[in-house]
Image (cartoon, rainbow, N blue to C red):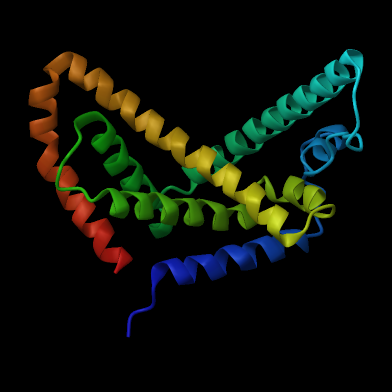
Length: 211
């Protein structure tokens, strides 16, 4: 009986989180201050009470600073992971991610009514899993280890989810940019009709993997 790929990938992701938490490496490339900002629930808050306008402004500024520093660190981690995935793009699991990014990008540009939205969503979800599982072998593992020392398993899972989603959407956006440039050259109708058979083949192959 064939195993459900989602169940397999979910377990792989959990193992990846646990292995990252237990890594002993000095390869982290972030500063301690940056790492601290990625640990959730660290935004200063006050007990429920009436706040002065100055206090509300200060809390807002602290929250915005936290958000912007976390976003900066997230971009850095995602960029490092993207480079690692590109260097290992020939691996079977990562090849499936590339295929999925093309199908999703094509549907965004050309909107194929034979593509089931639920299947596309599942395709993206499994791509996120595959990207996240690779984190244990990626250069970002050291930084994740440092961050993970102050996080629960759920928080580590959330962080990996954020990174993998950022990476996958970058890949979709990159592919869509290429499609947009080709549509400029050939016209939308000609481009979509010409590429549609190939994308449907990829879609069928990927959705058969989900069964």
